[in-house]
Length: 136
Image (cartoon, rainbow, N blue to C red; front, side, top):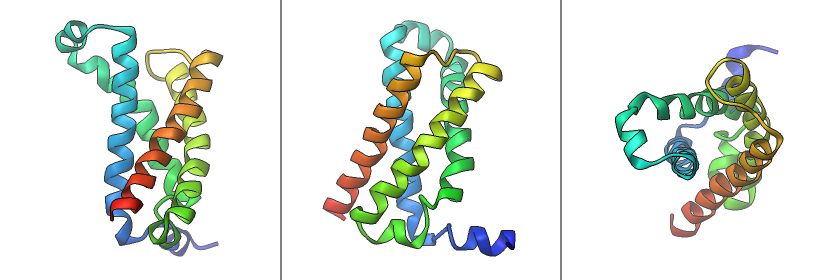
């Protein structure tokens, strides 16, 4: 399997709006989660804290989503193809993100947090993509 053609099949230029929206959806989800466990004052006084919250999941998403096909030509065509590709990408990305959070970044990967991230991440990315295709 040739790496350039493998990735070429999974990255479509038409997916740029999906990339932007997916990242925004994840940032919103992670920010809301951080706000549920700390205050705006704390986050304002510690701007690097949020970077530590975002990093494990954004790194994992950047690694996993292209491999699974979240930005392939099929993902750009319809919501029917795009949303399942996004969710199939999010599940392993969330697991990688949780591992990064547990072993590399500050935070833990407690089972309840893992369940919340798996479910709410799927809802955030799937929901955003549903809206995108509805109004595109």
